[in-house]
Amino acid sequence: MGSFLLILRRDFRLAFRRWSELATPLMFFVIVASLFPLAASPDASQLRDAGSAVLWMSALLSSLLALDGLFRADAEDGSMEQLILSPTPLGLIVLAKILAHWVVSGVPLLLLAPLIALSFYLPVDALPTLIIALALATPTLSVLAAIGAALTVSARGGGAIIGLLVLPLTAPVLIFGTRATELAATGESTLGPLYLLAALAVFALSLGPLAASAAVKVAME
Amino acid sequence: MIKPQIRPFKVESLEVWRGESCLFAELDFQMGPGQAALVTGANGSGKTTLLRVLAGMTLPASGAVTWSSTLVHRLDPLQRAEIAYQGHLNGLKKELTVAENMTFYSRFWNGGQEPGELLEELLEELRLNECRDRQVRYLSAGQRCRAALGCMRLKPAKLWLLDEPLTNLDARGAELVAGWLTAHTSAGGLAVVATHQREQLVEAVSVEIEL
Image (cartoon, rainbow over all chains, first blue to last red; front, side):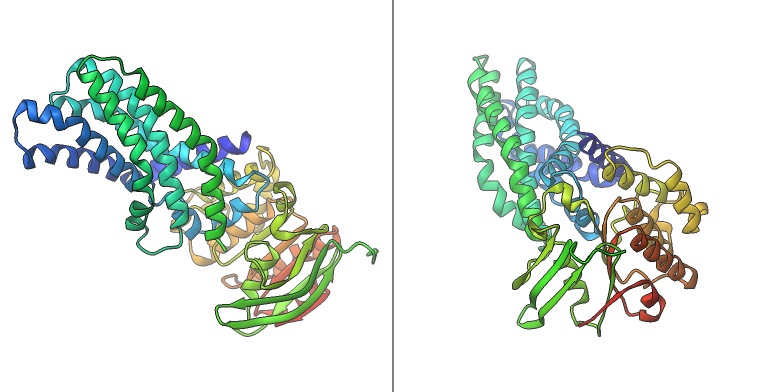
């Protein structure tokens, strides 16, 4: 547990020392979501219909972008070799790295999402559900993107390949996430899709780090 | 002094390939506590690959490397921590200061324990005191190399695997590494060092392997 916290603290410190890398995916999220109404019609009812889809797609793409380099910096400066030769299981180290990354990139996204949602005329009553759904979905997205990042550590131009590997796997998150948001917008019960999102998060967080650490080991050979 | 029956580190008929070419085959050696080996060879002869195989990070084509009778790539985490590996990549975080890097590794390898006195001694020995609070990205190659060696020293490892530890070091640095090796082996540690600067380390080792 001690090593878990150590990695967490180290990654937080690193994140704040190169904060511009953190800001990029967030700005990407804001810009993609706010460009959409310019391409579509500014009509309020149409925007409301498309709003949750746009929000979820931009959140998805921005989390992929954010996690692209999760392991690359460690692999390039040799820290990954040192982390592998440590008394801490690699799965735990990977989980700590994912968690650190989620706190610095996922949480700001949760805070920004309601603002974007309002610009799409989503009803204010739907905002709590949107935040809860995103809070349940973004850890799953982070884990999936981490597996992709681990597989592409040593590949040039990893970003595009990650998209190909990971995007098909994100379909369930996207389906339940948008469903929860739409149900909330029409004032119906959102418990069903939220439970399913929670189940997906538990599933991803328990098995994903193991898959990612196996991929990292293969990549380091 | 050295009990001949204890040979915790064994390399048996090792064969390693890189791409289409065989780097070396039928490599055998054994080491017991208190022994250090020097690996020499021309560029491209496979010194780095050998050390990575010894650390269990690369799989050999055939043969076996065992550490306390377990294959190195199957070691459990606690056994893995008995091996310190310092490769071409220094393992330092550029955005952290020298002291932060060393403190992190020390805590990470010693179950959260503070480095305390040892950190101060190492900074002094490595002449890194004045840049202890400088971020690693502002250091020279030699200083980075020394900081990385400092991190390596903070690991309570029995087996040291050092890949070209002297490359960027000045004469005093090289002397220091030779001294560390002697102290490590006389305390019962093991070491395998790959280097081109044979003369500077040859007195500290008992086995020589030429690839």
